[in-house]
Image (tube, rainbow, N blue to C red; front, side):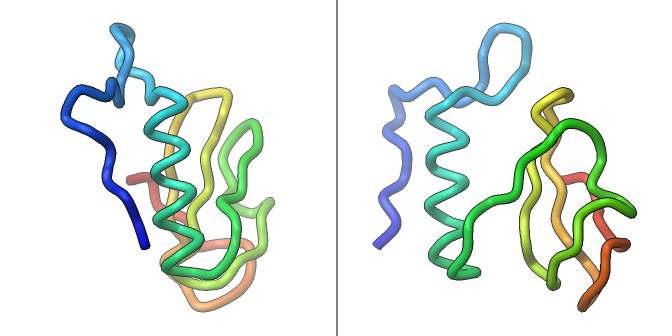
Length: 80
């Protein structure tokens, strides 16, 4: 069961970056939806991270969130 963040939870900091609360919630949603972990790394996943459609990737250097839009391979990542 996915528990949504509380209304009082801070999801984005004063610099516009997602907080740990947001990342924890996103990971929970992704695990339930895809039955796998959220991939993380530094830089874009395009051409570097192989995954199946619907997987999420968090660029920790940005930060930015991507979703895999093609069925297989390491291309087809789109920023959310």
